Length: 204
Image 1: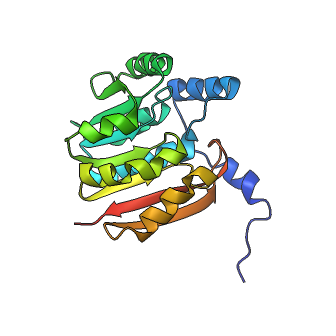
Image 2: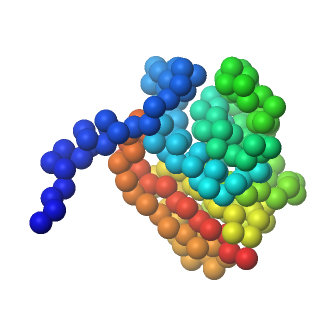
Image 3: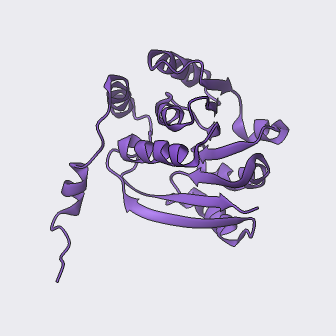
């Protein structure tokens, strides 16, 4: 009979993907300054999802220092483009510098704005949308995310174990325009490490 590893948290913490210098430096900054980032496991997952979808157009809500945008851009199609929205002008500037250091300035556009207000006026269609803003705002942008996603496009929402995400979790689960799964897991170096992520397929 198969048995579980006796210390899964320690075991899986030792299985995190390798990262280059720029990503490791952003992880150190995040720990020192208490900046929430997705960490290398979720970051790699986002990159894999973008690659698997052959994503050419990706939208991110919540840039912070550009950590997840790096993964998304690297996973996107060779001519892919990421548009990432950040409300804090200081974070937006830091993200631009980090993306330049990663050689991704031409592939990632950091837009300084309020994501909730800005989405209303956007018309571009995206293959993948990643939500990582205030959790209470997730439900407010759900309809706009549906409108901006292509058929069979993917909506990914981080931190859905937060209580402020409850209204979004309920709404996307009941929304017949999406087919959603909400996964609770241990995510090493994620902020926080015990959290959930929602994956919602936009139905045709």
